[in-house]
Length: 549
Image (tube, rainbow, N blue to C red; front, side, top):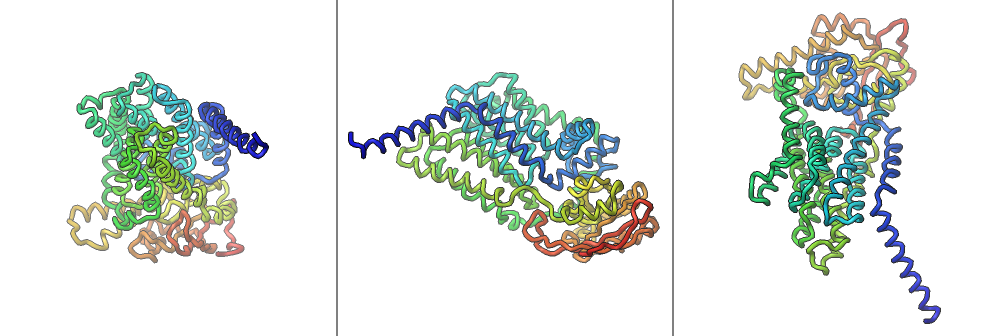
């Protein structure tokens, strides 16, 4: 062999050696997964939490202090989220540290549990190689850490962490595989907690169990340890909620059904959101793989889950990106499973089409990963701008915000370390009530009485909250897109009530700030103006803002 032939030969040997080394490393996730887990935890710790998550931390803290849900804390969603948020809040109290940091650690502990359950389930499957197991755990880690980047800790994120092992196990059940009973019960219990966070999530296990019954040709296929545990958990949760939090069903649910449509978007707007369009490539890639017999039953299970979650997104009719997160994560895992099978050549796809299908699968995964990377972690420019003002005018006290947007108060309250004087995260009941009362078309007398009652309840609650805990600083939103009148004047509206007018007398206007919203979590695409009001006191003198605006 000449010297000219030796170099290519050595290069080929080295390349094969590198591939074998990478395969061996992938087959042993214990060597690299903990390091990835720790790096992701450290990455998330310094960032803001999403506004909704920040509100839940504050509301759960009140709940643990004895506040009654749906009376002292007014939230549209069912109570399970409060119970799920209680452990990090309790630990933060015990350690005397930030609940935000503890919550991030809590999410990563749940992620570790989810990965462990998936690993245990994969180890029970005789046709899964160690390399395939490691590859799926890597895909699962990426899907649950990278894709939720802008909405980390949202209920959709928590649900996915808890429910993915159930979807994975069902994919293997489609192949007739067994699973130890104890492991299946734990997987079903975790899924029950996740699915129970929102009623819309129930669509997914319903579709999956129906698919399994069709494949097995018997309704008894749905009677498995994990599915029985899932159903028992959901039924038990509803029963417990009825006993422990009856106000949700008797008070909150009727109010929410009457007015929450104010936050809804048209079907066209919901279906043409950029996040929906991003799903088109993965959907087409899955269709191609399925037609080429490259989609096994495990990937089909995740694809069915994606369809179910997408239906839930449409039914919620808000068009909010985090509502679409579950559909994105599950189609990501479906395509990840297809790519693993193609690379391991365990599919029935024709050999000639395999390179093309690998390209499509890789492109689909890249498309889903690029979008959250472009947005980056959640940030709130309003919090950044208001933080020094709140620390100056309300240090050791509390604040209040007249707005219909949760991002105005949160995570501002959490980051400033001040109290929140309202029982509401926002004035979310008011827009719907006013909108429907302004246009009484098709409104019967009973509905009108209910809406008048909601409006009066809001007025009474605002007065009671100001009297119970007078805020030191009040933020007033001067532009309210969810209101029928964009120039709705909160102060003029509430000062019609003598109680609030009396309580408002001490407050002085100290200035205003403006915020260019643009393409951000505050996605109105406009410049917003907020007036700031201060309650003078020995601890909080109220000089005018040094640099208004």
